[in-house]
Structure formats: structure tokens, C-alpha cells
Amino acid sequence: IPSKLPNISTSIFSVMGQMAAEYEAINLSQGFPNFPSDPALNALVDQAMRDGFNQYAPMQGDFELRMEISKKIENLYQHFYNPETEITITAGATQAIFTIIAATISKGDEVIIFTPAYDCYAPTVQLFGGKIVPIQLKPPSYGVDWKEVSDKISSKTKMIIINSPHNPSGMLFSEEDMLELQRLAEKNDLLVLSDEVYEHIIFDGNVHQSASKFDALANRSFITASFGKTFHNTGWKMGYCAAPEYLMKEFQKVHQFVVFCVNHPIQKALATYLKDANHYLKLSDFYQQKRDFFLHLMEGSNFKIIPSKGTYFQMLDFSEISTENDIAFAERLTKELKIATIPTSVFNEGKKDFKQIRVCFAKTDETLAEAAKILSEL
Ligand code: PMP
Ligand code: GLN
Image (cartoon, rainbow, N blue to C red; front, side):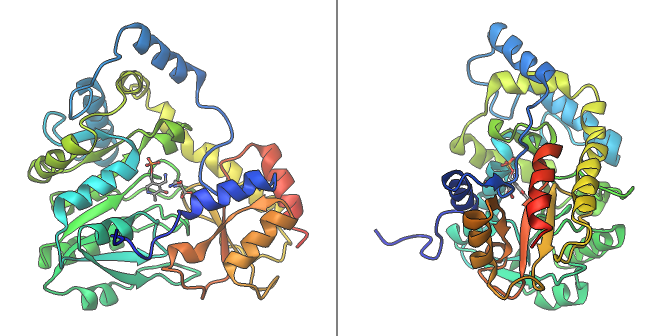
């Protein structure tokens, strides 16, 4: 059959994960923790199964969980989402992103993304006939030039996708960035998809600027978040989407035919677990310790490193170590030095202009020490 995505091959996260296993390498590639999720949360899932929550959940998600999410967002960002009509529980942020795009993007619509960009945005837009308009964020700051964004908006622009804290650079949007985005979105009547999966992993006293904090922006935004990132269980594939009612209505029209609903016992467990805000408010300190531990071990290495400001990723610039492109370098690291990382050209439409690899530091201190020992000797 003619391919609907002729230029797409297997995701880099599968490729590097498999290579890591094949060469028995320390796996700092795909973003997931190598330590367990909280036994207390696991026990709540067990309990929910024993309590009989083993059949379909409501299409929008368990109501108690939607209420807890609504409370969390209101406490943190002072914006109220009606749990009846403005929140849907999804199979991870990936399904939310797919559903948002499916519900809004039609043939010919233009969607602005900032590259390097997480890998699922562009193919999903293309699948629905949309056109990606990329805007390159340049190292070391990865800051946004809002004049350039304004210049690239056309009468066909339908949506801007943002992601702060940003995978893979660890960059954050400031309040000024969000106000600029709000101004442009209002002026040009644009939708915004705000990927906030790393909202609780933010360092050095910085504050997360959720799109929900800015009323006019919230009124035209879909926000997505991921429990997998927050509670150390990426394999559970649980997340949510929050949006004003007129957008959520369209989202749910699609959601009901993509999955109908998602894992019921885990939703019940998350509803209870979310009641204690410490379960997510302590996450930044937890990961800051890991980032600092890793960076300390990498002091004096030949990689050029700008400390990540959020997410559990750190970019390493290898331009003083090798002239290889990022893919060749990452492959060699995996095969010969037994460390798997992610080459970042995959986030840059395949462009190999930046000599950078991404490492995931959601790992035990032991793993980080082992990896840093090898990397810092390069
Ligand atoms: N967005 C970004 C920026 C991510 O890094 C990830 C990876 N988890 C996702 C979305 C997808 O999240 P989930 O695993 O909840 O589908
Ligand atoms: N979000 C994870 C990362 O960036 C990977 C998720 C996936 O495998 N698609 O590494």
C-alpha cells in the first residue's frame, strides 16, 4: 500500500533501546527511571483490582481522578477546569497528543513546532494532512525568537505546539515567553498544544509556566501531562488532557473511538495517590539531586555541558571529542563503550548540524556513577 508516512522509520527510542540490550550497554537513552514506582502506589492498584474495578472506566476517566487533577491544577496554577467537562484521562500524553491533533488538524492546516521537537508531533500532524512549520531553537540557550514566530504565522496557521520543560534541551519557557505566545495566539486566533509532561521536574528554584496560568491562553489551549513521568511508572501509560469545554468536546468525540477509556484500576489508585501533594511536589528536589550528582561527576570532562533546567534529560555537546555525526557517535558509544544515549538529530528533522547527544539521568546513583566514569574519560 502507499505509505501514509513515507519518511518515517522506527522510533529512535526503540532503536537505541534494542541496541542497548544487544550490546549490554548502560541504557541512558529512552527516558524512563531504572528504579521502582512507589510500593504504596502499586498497592493501591492491587487494592483497586481487589475492589472490583476491572471493567471499563467512564469514557472521560474516573470522576474522582478528574476531580483530583482539577484541584491540583487550581492549587498550582490558579485555573479551574471543570472535572465534568474539561478533563479526560488518556493512555499517556502520547495518546492525548494524537487525539488533540486528530480532533483539530485538517488538510492544509499549518502547525508551528519548535525544533528540536519531541518525535510524535510532526508525524501525527502529517497523518491528518497538516503541514509542519518548524522553528529552530539554537543552542546554547534554546530561546524562542518571537519575532520569527510572528513572521512564520500565516492565514493557514492553526496551532502552535510548545513543550516546557523541553525535551531534549531542558530549556524552560519564561513568563515573558508565555505572554508573547498568548498575544500571538489571540491576535491570530490560534490553538495551542502545551505538552507539560515534565511540569514537576524543574530545577534551581525555577517555576513551571503552565499554559493554564494565563487565562486567555488557557482558553485556547489543550494541556497534556503524564503520570508516568511524575510517578516513575512510564510503562503504565497514564496521562491526561485538560482544555476548555468547547475544545474538550471535540477531543472526546475522537477519544471515544481511539481507546474509549483507559486502565480503570490504575485510575482509581492515582485518584487516591494524588491527594497527597508531596507525591509530586518533591519530584524537582529528587531529580535536581540526580542532575547535580551527574554534573559533578562530569566536571572536567571534554563534553560541553549547559545544565538542564528541567526534565530528566541532559544534553552533552561532543564537538571537542569527535567529528562524527551524532548518530555515528551514539552508535559507537553504545557498541564500544557500552553506553546508550539518544542522538539529537532525530528531534531536528534529521539535521545533523548539532553535535549533541541526550542522556537520561532518571537512574540510580550507581548507574549514573558508572556512566559518568566512562563518559568523562572521553
Ligand atoms: N511529550 C514529551 C515531551 C515526552 O518526553 C514524552 C515521553 N514520555 C511524552 C510526551 C509522552 O508521554 P507518555 O509516556 O505519557 O505517553
Ligand atoms: N519520552 C521518552 C523520551 O523522550 C520516550 C517515550 C517513547 O519511547 N516514545 O525518551
